[in-house]
Structures are given as structure tokens and as C-alpha cells.
Length: 185
Image: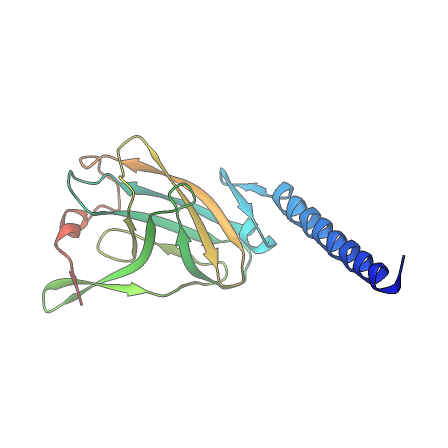
């Protein structure tokens, strides 16, 4: 075997070894998902110290988008930044993080690029305040909405929120009936 062929074989072996080791790392991360609060955390260890609860609201017939409300509680003592929310079961859909504010008696929604969760703190999304807008997914009562919360440090946490009916009341529903009347501003 000439020198050029030996170099090519060595390069190919190096690529194969790197691919095998990356596959092993990915498998180890997948196997090390930690059960916490009924949800599995994947990625860096910080996501394992997070509790997620919440629900999505059923969409009225013909509505182009729905809303979801998530409560995040940090148990790690370290602040973290929620960078985006994904819909792993609905790649065609998207989720936007929003906040609602009263301006001159009118509810106005504003998109958020990130949400900071303080260490040992809680963020409670609720109607008329911070919430998730869900596009491209029909939310029907009795189903679940799978979400992947992706943090700025690269960690991710997956959860499935129950979809509650339009008439089903919750403690945080003050203002929910006004949700369809928001104006972007």
C-alpha cells in the first residue's frame, strides 16, 4: 500500500472513530435522562433540576392558534434562560413566547425572545400574562401537547401538557376569556 492510500485509510479510520464516539456520547445522554415530576429531562444536568407543570387550552373551532400555560420551578439554585419552545410531535408547528400587558385599557401581546428563570425561582405562565402561543397544531380537549423547552445553555426538557376544554376552569383562568381579544403592539 502506498503512502497516499495509507493516509486515506488512516483518515477514514479517524472519521469512523469520531463518529462512533459521538454516537456513544449521544446514547449515554439519552440513557441518562432523569425522571423528575413525571417528565424526562434530556441534555445537560441543569434540566434535571427543573419542575414543569401546566396545561394547554382547547382551541375554539376555526381558531388559527392556541395558548399554553407552563409553570417552571428551578431546583438547581442557578438561573437559566428559556430560549425557545419546540413541538417535537408537530415539526410543522411553532411556539412563540408572549407576554400580555394592559395599555390604556387594552390588552396587548408582545413576543418574548427569552424568559429568565431565577435560581430557586418560579415562573408561572397564566392567562392575561406570560404564555405560549401555539401555531399549526389543533389543540383538542383530552389530548396532550408534547413540548421541548430549550434553554440558552443547550439543555432541554420535554413535557406533555394536558389540553383542557374551553369550559374547564382552573385557578389561573382569570383573564382567560379575554385571550382572543388581544392586540399585537
